[in-house]
Length: 292
Length: 315
Image (tube, rainbow over all chains, first blue to last red; front, top):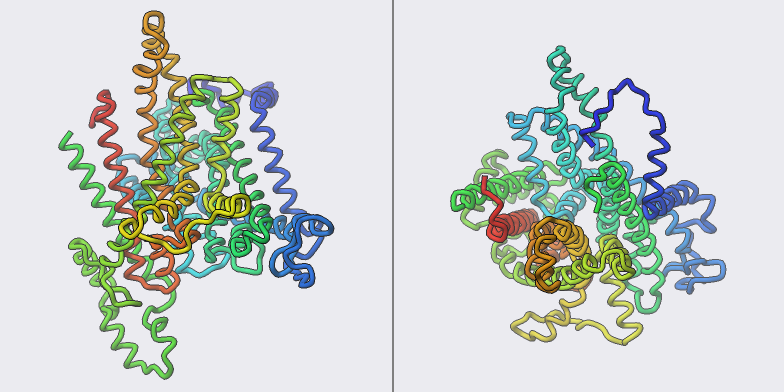
C-alpha cells in the first residue's frame, strides 16, 4: 500500500470503480454492510415500524408465544418483544456511536501525538496510561467505572470510551510511527511546516483507512459491552429498552418463555456479526497484504 | 534472556502499581461519600459520628498520604479490610480467586482443544465446503456474546434434555464431579470465542507456512503426514500461542458475567457485589488482582514465545 505513492493533487480516475470491484470480491462484506444499513434504518424508523409502544404493558397478554399481533411474543409484563428489539437497536447504536465519537477521537488524538513524538516524555507518559487501561480486563473496567458513576446512558458512554481508547491509540500510534518516516513528512518538515500542520495534513488523512477498520470492529465490541453492562443492571436504566436488559429479564423465564431470550440475543448477535464481517472486509479492501 | 525476564517483570510491577493508582484515584474522585453512604441507613447520625468514622477509615488524611499508605500496604499484600464484613480483603480474594482461575483455565482448555483441530482442518482442506463451513462457524463464534450463549445452553439443555446444572455450587474438594459439571457450561460459553479466534489465526498461519519455501523443499521427499505434523503444524502454532495472552483478558472479563449467571462464587461475583455495595477496599483489591493476573499471564506467554521460537531475540 505504501509503495504506491499517489501524489495528493493528482485526480484518481476510476477510484470508485476500483472500490466497487474490490467490494464485489467481498460478498460477505457487502451482505454485512447491507445488514448494518438495515440495522440503522430499523433503529431510526423504530417509532414508525414498531407495532406497539415498547413500554406499553398489555397485562392480559403477558408471556404470549410469538405469532399473531405479537411477532416475537410478549415478555412477563406483556410488552411486545418485537417493538422492544427495534427500540433496543436504537439504544445500542446510539451508545455505540457516542462511544466511538468520544473514545475514537480521544484515542486517535493520543495515538497521533504519541506516535509523532515517539520516544519523548509525552509519548512515554501517554503510553503508560494506555498500558494501565489495557491491563484491566474489559468487563472489570466497565463494571468498576459504570457502577460507581451510576446507571445512565451518559455514564455507560464514559465507561465504554475508556475501553476503546487504547485500541484506537494503538492503531493510530503504529501508523503514525510509519508515516513519520515517510519522505513527504520529511520534506514538509524541511519546508518549515508546523508540527500541527504536519499532523493535520499528512498524519490524519493517511490514518483514515486503518481507523475505519478499527471503528467497525470496535462497533461490535461496544455493542456487546453495552449489552453486558445492561445485563448486569448497571448499563442502560429501565424502562429504556436495551437488548442486555431484555436478556436479563428473560433469564428469569427461560424455561417457560425462551423467546424472551432468543430474540434480543439473536438481534445482538446479528448486529455484532455484521460489524465484525464489515470490519474484516474493509481490512481486506484497504490492506490486501493482510488478507487471509 | 534472564535480563529480559527481569526487565519485563519490573515493568509488569510498574503497570500493576499504575493500575492501583488509577483505581484508587478514580474511587476517590467519584461522587458519593463512602461514610455517608455507609451511615445513610442509620437514623440520626451526627456530624461528629461521620467525622469519627472517616478518621477510623483514614479518609480524613490528605489524598496523597492515603495513596502512599495504600500502596505501601498493598506491596505487602495488605489491601485493608472490607467496609461491609470487616474481613481482610486479601482473605476474601484468596478465597474466591481459585474458583475464577479454575473457570478461566477450563475456558482456555475449551478454546485450545476445539480451536486447534478446527483451524488445522480448515487449512488442510482449504476452500472445501468444510473449510467454508468452519470459517462461518469461526466468525459466528467470535460474534456470539458469551452470556447469551450461556443462557441458551442452560435453556435448551433443560427444554430438550430435561437436564440442568446443579443448583448449589460445590468446591472441587467437596464434590469434584458436581463442581466440574457446574463449571462445564460457563467454561464452554466462555471458551467459544477463544476457539473461534484460535481457529482463524491457525488457519491463516498454517496456510502461510504451507506456502513457504521450506515446505516446498520437504514435500517431494517426505510423506504428507510428516510434512504436515512435523514441519507445518509446529511452525504455525507459534503465532497462535501469542493469541493466548490476549484471550486470557477476554476470559477474565467474561468470568464476571458468567459467574453471576451460573451462581459461581468466584472473584467476578465478589467484585460485582462489592461494586454495588460501594465496598471500595474490596473493589480496589479485585481490580488490582485482575490486572496482576492478566499481566503475569502475558509475561509468561511472551517469555515462552521465545522458548518455542528461538528466532525471536530478546531485544
